[in-house]
Length: 538
Image (cartoon, rainbow, N blue to C red; front, side, top):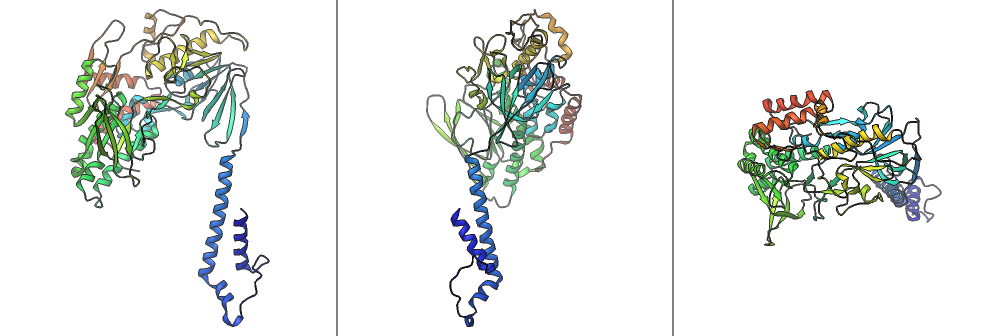
C-alpha cells in the first residue's frame, strides 16, 4: 500500500541518508543527536524489524488478493490410446473393485481420488490403538496391474454432454484439469455426518474415524491424554480422570469395534505402563437409537452389549451429543448429552478424546454433480447402476430408486464387481455414439473372495444387479466377536465369542489384495498379542 511504501522509504532514508531521507534541517552538531540516533545498534535493530514487518504486511496483502481472485489454470488430459476410457472417481471398495476387475486389454482405466490408496476399512479401528500398523491395511492405487493413470485430485464437476470430468489439483488448488471419458464410474463415497452439532468440527478433541489420517490422530491423542494426565503439572484428580475419559459416538460396527479395541488396550497395555492413571480411565459409548449394532440379530446385540459392560464400557443408548465445547489448550473438553426418550433432559460430560462415527453425509462433489439425488443426498441409479448417459454410480454415494442398499463395504464391492463384468462383456464394443443397451446377463459376486469365485455359478445370471447377503460381523478385540448369518441365502444362525472372532479374522485376512498384507497382518496380530502394543508417541 502507499502508506507502507512511504514508511519503508522513510526508514531507509534514516539508515542511508539517501534521497528519500527527511529534508528537515539537522539539529546542531554539538548535541550529536543524528549520529547517536543512526549509529546505535538498538536503533538499527528497531528499524530493521520495522522493515521486516512492513514486508510481511505486503506479502499478506498480496496473498489475500490472490485468495480473493484465484488464478484459474485449465488443462486437459489427452487420449494416448484408442481404447475406450473408463474414469473411476474414488478409490474405496466400489471404485477399487472396478479399477482392478476391468479388462485392461479392452479399456484404458484412469482413477481420480484424493487418497492414493485403497483402505481396508474393517481393520481401521485396530490401527487407531496400535493392534495393526497403518500401512498394513492399505493398498496403493498405482499397484493396480495395467492401470492407465492415477490422478491425486478431487473431482468437482461433470459435463455429461462433453463427457468430461473437471478435477482440482491437491497440491495447486488454483489449477484444474479436465479428464475425458467414455464411461464414468462415480464411487466418491461419503463423509461423516455431524448433523450440524455445534463444536464438533471446530474441536481439537473430536476425531472422525473414516480415513488413515483419522486413525493416526486418534492414536496420538490417546497417548497424549495419558501423558498429560501423568504430568506433575496436573494436580487435580478430577482433571486427570477427565483427561483419560474416552467417548465413542455412534452405535455402528465401527464405533463398537473401536470401543472394544480401546478397552483391550487399556486392560492389556496401558495398565502396565500407566498403573496410576489407568485406574482413572473410563470409556463411554453414546448411541442415539435404542440399541447398538443396528441391523444385527438381537442375540448378537445382547451378547455384544454385555461384553462392553463387562469390560468397563458405559453404554448409553437413546442419547445424543447436542454440543461440544473444546478447550483451547488441548486439555479437557465438554460434551452436552441430550436424552432421546422424550424427557428432554441434558447432562454435561467431560472428556479427553471423543471419536465421532455417527452417520454418513454426501460429499460436496455429489451435491454439485447435477446428477439426480434422493432424499438422503445419494445419487439415484437404476437396476443397472446407471445414473446418466454413460455415467454409473455405486457404493455409499448411490442408491437404487426402488430398492436402496445400506452403505456397506459388501454392497459397494458387489456393485463394483457387477459393473466390471458388464463393461467387459457388454460395453466394450460400444462405439462413442452408440446408446447403451441392457447388459448381458452376469452372475452375482456372492462369494467374499476370489478363491471361492467358482461357487458364484450356483446363482442364475441376470442383467440387473443383485445384492447377495454375506452376513455381518463385528470383532470384540482379542478373542471375541459376533457374526450374524441369519440373512444368508437358505438361512443361518449366529456366531459368538471365539468362533466369531476366528471367522472375522479369517474372512478379512483372505480378502487382502496383496500377499504382503496377508503376511504383515497376522505378524502384527501376533506381535500385539505376545509383546503388547506400541505406546510411543511421535
